[in-house]
Image (cartoon, rainbow, N blue to C red; front, side):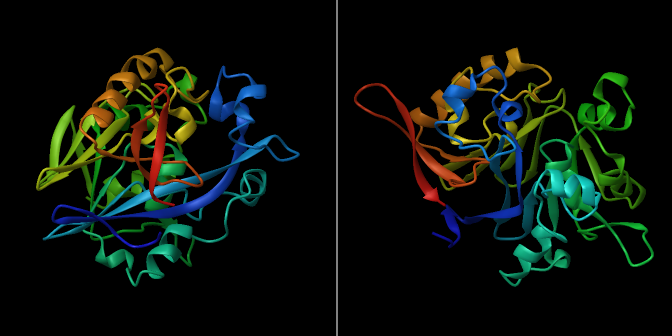
Length: 284
């Protein structure tokens, strides 16, 4: 299933910002390995398959992106460690759909970790940092930006300023506070949890709604309340928010989009006769 997903007058297309492999313990936090390895088989280096499912959004008046994958700037040592793809996967995958960076009007960044914001910039032939989507307005929560540029000691290694500082220098950055409508029917809301300034995205058109909760629930396996990331800065907030968010998605039959699941990028959530929650794939 590779065609655009209709959502009222909008069209949605999950698109890879790059595959990688991450330590399974980091992806499942306090969940014992004997449990998580049943749904995510690790390799000999204890890494599991992870996707960066960005979202291309076509409205009646614009073309935008939610998150940008990891891009092309990582050092070779890091690329080998995480089994990252070469070059700039997101740009390459956009081109396969005949879309260039110049076609993108706006970008929403759910947060500024490298696997969501790294693809926002690249180094040109003179090794100078440049915005990838040089026509696009980029939207980030103000508190996330403050943490990203704040050089906070306890967040060392969480943010790489080469990913996003060039956006501000080029005048492409728009800070938002809490809740804001980016385009008609496209709203961001501050959630916190994964990071202090993490935001989720709601897309609504003609009575149909899709939710991109980003790293509040990155994979189908994380639908369970206590299956959270070791990377979460505030795991208790994630545990409080996630059940009510999922309940709302189920009750109103909203489309759920997963930021890191390697097999299912979009699904309808279903509860079976035994009360077990599952995902019915819409896009694989």
